[in-house]
View 1 (cartoon, rainbow over the protein chains, first blue to last red):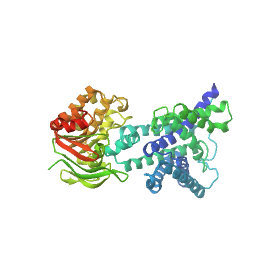
View 2: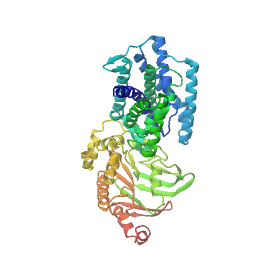
View 3: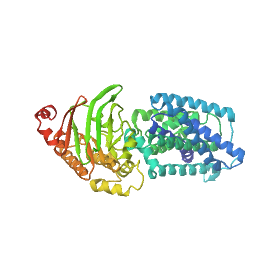
View 4: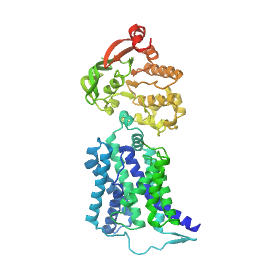
Length: 286
Length: 234
């Protein structure tokens, strides 16, 4: 029992990281109708941006987080303007493939700038707290709280602001949004900015929890897509839920199968969702 | 000066003209109905006027300004609102959010605009926090029209507002449209239920294969035996 609860704690932690990535990916899908394969690499580059801020200015990671989010948001908007915007009118599959190329370019850039070896934000050992039989690192609590703040922020943005409502409207019914006079280009820019910022946060949290390496985001892409699909494609709240479920399932699976198969668990859930309830938990976009 | 005038429109998809010299005119306080068989280009005419289908030849004039092929957001700020036939609400958004987004292109406070729409559709006020996607067809049509009315339009364009509604709701919807028109809003609508629509219309057009066949007052079109035989099912 203790083991299950401990794994659930780890699962919620992984789940919040996945959720942040999945919210952005699902919003991009909702508005632009393509699976963004470079999303994991947005996470990685966000983590490395934070690393630079941490090492150059000698700041704590959490203080570097907003800078990394801002830089990644800018990068996402820039990539959209340079790459995706030109091919938006063609078939979504072309966008998908070009996002794959973008992913490769970003990963290579990371290797060129920061090198290909593992790095950490802080060296030294952080003493975990022991609460009864459970182990919790202070960083974990920090990650969980920061992720919760961001998710609440996204919720407020989507429900309280004009731009947020316009974003949901576009994700709901693109043609009607156009007819209503919602400026599609502005909404798309905001979608990239928010998607990029959330991905950066996910990357930084992942880096805090483990370490930084150039493929850190790419390897999480599958669970992120699984969370997106489970939650209903294009549904931000579904993505949060999906992220938490996939995160917990991946951690709990180590009770019965070797830890190396964690991504396979995400994959299995994704396949099961597509077979049993392809529209996702919350009915998603088609 | 007419509120809207479309002169000799040629428009269509992928180089094929669906409209072939279509003419339309709406005066400021009129209800104008377009009827005609399937594939006549009724919906295409509406979309072309609103800038959703490119016009190859001809021009659209709104209150003296040429607005041919302008993007929808320009149309909205000029005071033209369009309600498409299908999927005309944002299903996952609440009624209130649907209405608010209707006025997205406009500046200023929504409060007064909302009250105006709620005065026409009191039911929407009752159900303003309801998700639009789970409402009945009739209610959804109200949301769609309410959304369009949020821009305080001078011209309201409706593409088959009674499609898929029960006979009772058809009458109610047409009545509402007549009410909206009494507020001084010009209405241009495409309608399958030609009989009811022409009964409240000031003028009507009969369109076939993208060309004007008949143009007359609503009652006169209804009385025209040729029109009756062709499009009204005898």
